[in-house]
Length: 417
Image 1: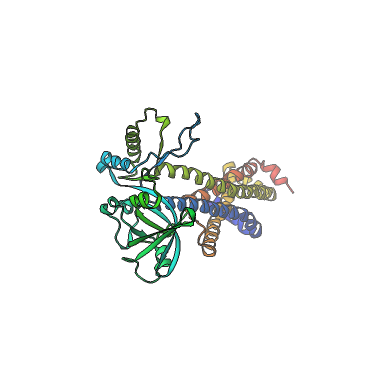
Image 2 (image 1 turned 120 degrees about the vertical axis):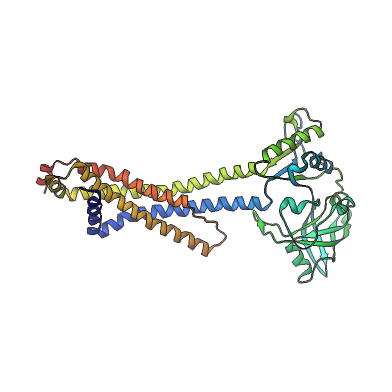
């Protein structure tokens, strides 16, 4: 019997028992749809996390103060205050043209803002002039700080789009003034007047926090005027030339700071250097495990569907014992019978797999329409794996019934009632 004849006989058998075949395929359809939908959620979550991290800027290396050793307990003491603007300058000279940009940040806390008869509360951060290049954050209007603003600790500010709309409404903020107010000791309020010179492009939220509600001021202004912490910064952020250069740049940053801070034992550093590749790799590992778990849960449905395939194929062999005997009596070989039943099982699972893909796609589209914030992403690899697994299940769970049919003795099969 040719392969085409075996395929035709398999389809004929499925067509004869439409309801039974449909119910058998249902298990595979649900299993494949579950795998695709669940893996789509995991893949979407992974892509969302990656895009969120990259929205902070690409190829970033961040240096932050490290908690100091206290009473021989590493990291048990307060955070070091040894990271300075001079460190940033030294790194800039040492790294030279091997990096794109570098900037230092100083957190200044939350301040009450007033302008044009309205008030708002925002986070204030001191940054240096290369902040837009490092963070890949363009301006919607106006200009950013230059070196003279930073060197002179001038009272100028660049604000986020949310801050601008809440303080100035439809008016153009550029050139206008706003007051920063903060209650000091003895309930005395500090009031400082800043001139707005720029408004940032909207960035949206990152991990649930709005990035558009902030006020950027020169780092020196944050140090000398707002916080009084003139000798330290909270972070130095470096934008490497490429993803491939990040490892070498990270090592050079660490070596430069070890020399500057006169640290002989690398295990006793007072700073922490992290690059974005390491962060993304760690997050990929977590989201990959999450996606694998979701896929495994969906795979259980496929396994149940495979058991259903085996059960129905065994019933089919039992019902068609005389037919098998007649086929063998007229010259059908074992491999002909084996291929006929295997093709029947593979057709059931293959068809179920294709229908499962359509159902899985429909589920993900429905999720997108109901709640657009839920990340879902179907990849060609997921579809290929789902179909491949469904066909493999047809072979694995259809093999035993097919072998049982092929091993039937023709005389005993013909005598079967």
